[in-house]
Image (cartoon, rainbow, N blue to C red; front, side, top):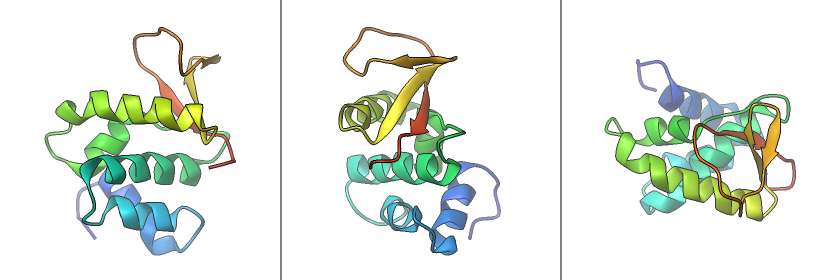
Length: 115
């Protein structure tokens, strides 16, 4: 495991836990394509945090790369795709966002329980 705190360490803990999000964490920390790993990181973090908490697209990006900012647009698009599939909800404040809607600004990703 890494010594640094943050999303990477959280993914490593999830992987080692053997819980329901462990398979996603293993994929995220593996050697697959970057989009597949980023999608898996989003799912692992959202599932591990549960329906009462949330994660940010930047958490998934930071878990995979030191230079995470270039990954953020792709993480946001993958979050939209996951929301369209019903795996997660996207939120701003208390409002659930339409994944096909027009929105800007910070979003959160909350596990929906079907992915």
